[in-house]
Length: 199
Length: 256
Image (cartoon, rainbow over all chains, first blue to last red; front, side, top):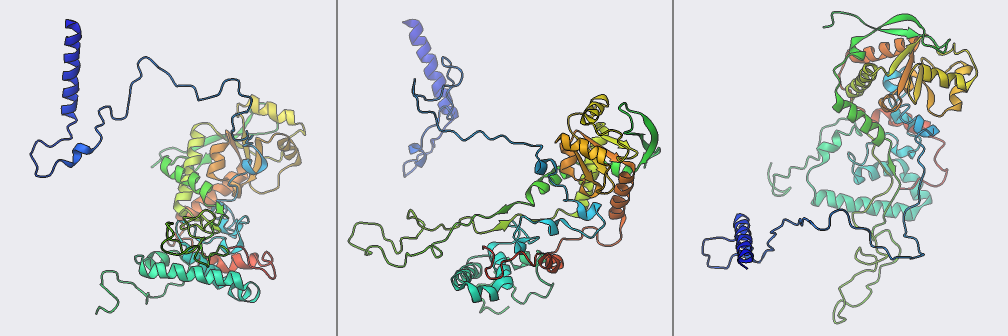
């Protein structure tokens, strides 16, 4: 009995100490009740040491169940297949070759209008669609008016987004090397309150 | 500063055992650079990423069919306000900020980094005894794949071997042997790259290939002009589109 009370006292003191250590209450009296009181007190930091149940629990399975557990098909990956063994073969052809070829010319798995075009991380969707429109506008107007309408609608939507919601990105766009280097007549100075302000 | 010349033994493929027939000088700027592992990593990541293409396109509400009518009145129904059945909160509705259209991840790592990556890979491979030099690949004597297999065992080449020749024409004996085992491969010198150097256990360079490699790498290292010449699409656009002239359908434009 004595021992029990002792241990409980010890446990309580430890608990109190740990709670004092992880204090989340203000000692200063406040006119409004402390907001942090209603927060959950993580005494164990989300970790519970399972002393009597070590190891990893088995997965929840129905015993003697005939229906197999769904799982992805087993795929054999052949890292020495023809394409894998020669992976990256022509990536340095502009340095090690005679200078007539470049890896951008050899992206045959890419549609021709995207071959060598700056990728997703550099050119955004608007730039990409304008590039497509520059190449195929006449053909689309002639043969696929619905697709042409959708393309124009998307470009218009993205331009509105660019002009009204976004910061100036033309400076980044100029570094892509898509245009001839000309002075920037459309510089958008976001430090001004509106375009009507005097410069 | 290097006070002595780095050299390597040259062996021959005429015999199964390793027989040394000469010594070749190695340029320290290529085979003894300080190993920049970070640049090596950038090169491998570049090789894996720059070729990727996404053809997925999630349609927006504007591109999906229908959805022009207001499905139910704005008020007094007890349901949420809805202006179209193709908005993003509907099942079978369009996607906002989805994956858009055919895109690629193309970029070109700066030339200096790629050269440095090649030199680092060669340096590390040579230090690990993974680069061997032979006088010629055309003098492979036998048409027997077992002979090549035994030669690799005898010379301790490891599991996979990459033969590098100066051009794309190699003697028929070696070609026939390499076709038998998928982990023995032959590449021309312009096909050498960081990924393959790391992938294969042993890289075997013929002496003419080594000469071309050193000449071209040193030329790019020491050429005049801007050090990091950027890849600009506008410079290559005309040529790329001219070469792809017959690929487009005469009537329909490609998927966007």
